[in-house]
Length: 332
Image 1 (tube, helix red, strand yellow):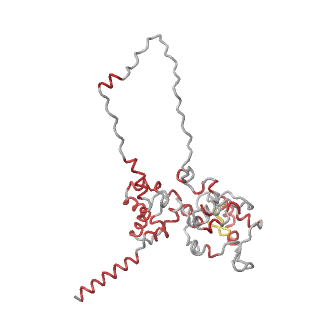
Image 2 (tube, one colour):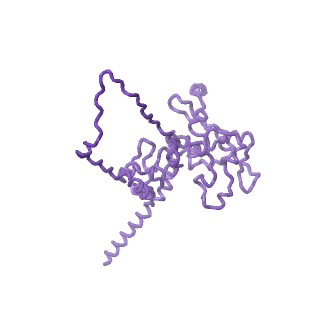
Image 3 (tube, one colour):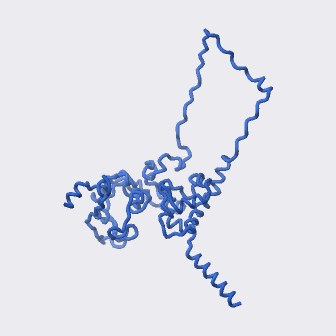
């Protein structure tokens, strides 16, 4: 009996350890998936959007597990970029996202699954009643002029108001101008049901006096800082507190013909503390950061800010600012 009791206790301890190790689907989603699937970055299906998931649901859960575990060439990294996640945790995150859209997607697909009813066969009586084909015209006869109706295509307009129907919705850098700087009640960050949200000033109203930019939230923040349009506050309790501004440029050599990247610490540390970027985003050690355009477009590294609140990565020359010949001359 003692052996049986010990075996039961061991089984319970193993089960508890496994349960503690495995994370819930929501916890994995919040940690590894929300960055892309909340906003639909790089074509990722949005969480809760049945239209985005409808075609994927048709392929079955096994196919979705495979993409989540192994990644694909369209921007999905293996395991969401988190190699520390187990297979079970990745599948739990997929199940969590599917659970939010399965009922709606199934309901939307139901009318399309109904096979069209075949047209009734024409009977001999119907054939007899049908008008006879016109007899061939005489060699010198002239056919009467008949004006055929001209088919015109309806203009492609989006009357649904659904962001997925917007031709620019596939790319966060090409959103329509009307979608820039929405009021807090519609920005997807603040609680639209909270009374305090309605009391907040809309960004569009507060940005009118600042120099405009071509990307992000359409404000050139570096110019605003140099023109003394804004004065970042380093301590919310002490208005006289001064931050540490580091005037140091980091040059990152780039393979190929593109100019090298210059990272200016000065423009960043004039309003950001070192802890905003180090070590969570960038490890302060040479060679420790694997930076690529794919990672940036997925909202990692520089993409944490650029393309969201800072200028987008389409402004290539703002970062790729050092010519290769100048770099070679400096090295010599």
